[in-house]
Image (cartoon, rainbow, N blue to C red; front, top):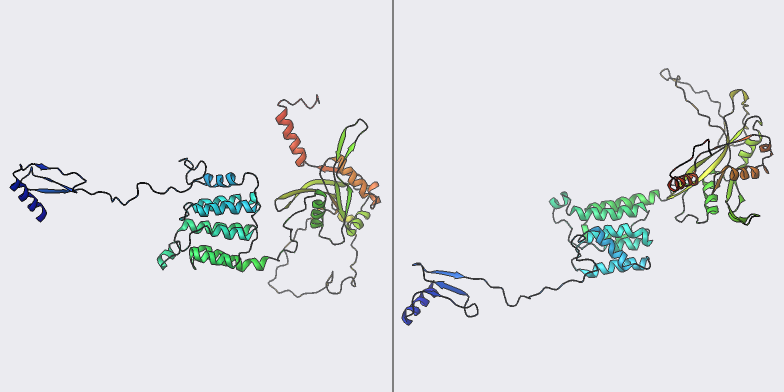
Amino acid sequence: MKYSCCLLRLLARSGRPAGVLLLSSSSSRFNVQHNNPQHQLLRHFYSSPASPARRPVPSRFINEDDPKEKKSLVQREDLFEQIAKESKTKATFNQVVDIFLKRDIRRRGHVEFIYAALKKMPEFGVERDLSVYNKLLDVFPKEVFVPRNFIQRMFNHYPRQQECGVEVLEQMENYGILPDVETKVLLIQIFGHKSHPIRKYQRLVYWFPKFKHANPYPIPKQLPEDPVDLARFSLTRIANDLDAKVTIYQLPCTDVTESGKEVKLPYIVGIQSPDQMELLSKHNPKRPVFVEGPFPLWLKKTCVYYYILRADPTPPEEKIEEPYDPERSFYYPLQLDLSLECDLGDDESFDVDDLDEGPVFAMCMSSQGDQATLNQWISGLQLNNPILGQVPTLFRLEGGPQELQGAAANESGHSHRPHPETQ
C-alpha cells in the first residue's frame, strides 16, 4: 500500500487526471485503477523467461503416435515384430529389451512390455534361458516398489507390479527353470524382502530340488524329430519292460508302381516282450485276437498314437493256476501263506472287484492306421509267433487323426454327399 500511495501523490503533483493508469507488461508488472474511491491494486503473474518454450521429445517407434494403441499390449508386441522381422533369436530378443531400457529413464509401460515379452519368448526360443528372465526382471525400476512401513507391506504395495513379477516366476516354474542368486538380488532391489515375488522365489528354491529327480521315467527336453525314433522311444516308455524288443517292420519310403505312380509307404514299429510271446503261444487257437486303436499318448506337447494286439479275458473254466516257484525270488516272495489273527471287530465281508481286461500280446505305431498297414504288422509278428497263422484276427479300428482330417477335407470340398446305396 505504501507504493500505491506514493504513486498517487506523484500523479496529483503532475496534474494528470485521476483516471486509469495503464502500464505495459514490459515496463511494469501491475496496473492501477482509480474509478473506485477505494484504490485497488491488480497484480498479474507472468511465466519465467528462463522456462524453455519446448520440452524434449523422447524417441518414438513406428506407429507409436496412434492414440488407440497407446500404452497397450498390442503396441508392445509390435516392437518385437518391427525389430525382429528377419530372424527371431536370443540376440534380437535382448536387442528389443535394450532398446526399451534406453528409450525412457522412467521406464513407463514396463508392465505391459514384460507381459508382451513373456508371450513372445517361445517364438524366439528363449523360454528356457535363465539369463533372459533375469534381464526381464531388470526392466523393473529399482527401489520404487519397496514398502516403507508395515501398513504398505500389509496392503500389498503396488499390486500390479507384484503380480507381473510373480507371472515371470510362474513361467519359469512352468518350464522347469530354477532361479539363481541373481534373480533373488533383483527381486529384493525391486520389491523388498517381504513381498509376494520373494515368497514365490523361496517356494521355487525349496521345492524344485526335491522334485527334480522324483520322476522315475523322465522325458528329455528335446524329443526326437525322426518319427521312427519317436515311435521307438514312445513304445519303450509304454512297455516298461527292459526285456522288451523293438522291431522296425517297415521304414518310411516312396515306392513306384508299374503304372509310374508314386506311393508313400508308412513306417511300422512294434514292440513285444518274452512274457507276451509266452502268453501268445499258450493262447487258445479257437478264440480270436483283436487289433484295437488308435490310443493317444501325450509326450509334453506332442501326441502320438499306438495300436495293440489283445484277446478277450480267459473264461474261468479254462484258467489253469500254475504253482509259484518258491526259489524264483528269495527277497520278494510271490506267494505268502500266512494265517493272521483278526480282531472281533474286524469286518471281512467287503468285496473287491477285479476287472480282467484280457492279455495284451504286442503293440505298434504307424503313420497310417488302416487295415492294410496293420496287416503287415501282423505278418511280421508271425515270424516269431507262429500261432498267429492259426488264430483268427479281427480289427476294431476307430477313426484316427488322419481319417478325421480326410473326412473334414471331404466335407469342406464337397457339400453334397451321395446316398450310401448309390455308393
